[in-house]
Amino acid sequence: MQPELGEAVSRVLASGQLLLGPELDAFESHFAGWCGRGAAVGVASGTDALRLTLTALGIGAGDEVIVPAFTAVPTAAAVLAAGAVPVMVDVDAETAAIDPAEAEAAVTERTRAVVPVHMYGRPAPVDELAGLGVAVIEDAAQAHGAAAPSGSASVAACYSFYPTKNLGGIGDGGAVVTDDADLVARVRLLRHHGMRDQYVHEVVATNSRMSEVEAAALSVALRHLDAGNERRREIAHRYRAAAPGVAWQRDHPRHVYHLCVLRTADRDAWRARRPFATAVHYPLAVTQQPGYAHLARRPCPRAEAWAAECVSVPCFPEMTDEEVETVCEALT
Ligand SMILES: Cc1ncc(COP(=O)(O)O)c(C=O)c1O
Image 1 (cartoon, rainbow, N blue to C red):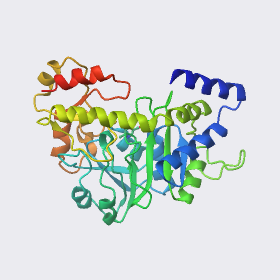
Image 2: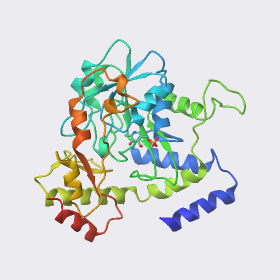
Image 3: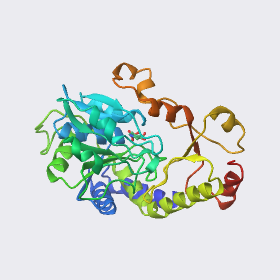
Image 4: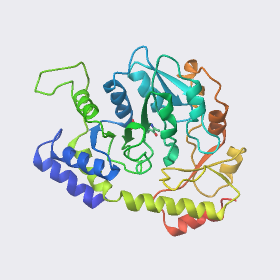
């Protein structure tokens, strides 16, 4: 994408408008359309997309937010940054997604929201969480194309555009995507010092703007997203067909394979024997993280088992067929 990205960056520099301009407007409207939702609000990161959604919904000090114990730590960090307490609950052994029964068991009179994470790009149960009677906020950081459709129980889907994501920028970025016009207005206010009119601050807020350069780059990347997701699916399905006996994360028709993940009990030995690079997302459940373990309330053995056994194998659109074949041959 480098030539297209170079052109987009030059266009922004020549325009002289570097923040809150036409590139952000254009990206927001294209991305909302691509997601099939009413509006998107670009912000500085995926973490901020979650934090600002919580704050915009009035969730903060004294409130509890249920999150899966197996996720990227920013899911829980965003809740703390909003002033609320993350309550970690266990996940499903086959999908790595939040277990709705565990979430229900964790509800207290302080619970205000639940954040299902579409782990590795596989759709998490969203409508199954509606019965909790609290706001359902999707962490779609790894799931461009896998979030719940309009009309679901979800209030908003929060995206990250970290460069390695399925839709990645050339720096940090994030977005809140929703059909709720009040939420849109509120997040727009919160991302820009609480200002609607210049230097009139309606609410206390900070800065979480997405730059024009980032928005222009994301508009370029968005043009390649469908093809990229398709290629990721094709690669993952080739692996699964080549090694059906492997303990893969359970498939789903809308899985966008941000990561292609399997489980193995002898992880270090398994990784050492492969002629390709592997990674671990993530080696610890949130309940096991040094900075977060003190927040653990409930046992989360399935989350901890995922952390002990997960391995990510190469899966990105730029892989050649030959590289995919090399992985296929060495999976078992
Ligand atoms: C599941 C999940 N949630 C939240 C985030 C945070 O996104 P960002 O790094 O853009 O703040 C990430 C990405 O790192 C993620 O994978």
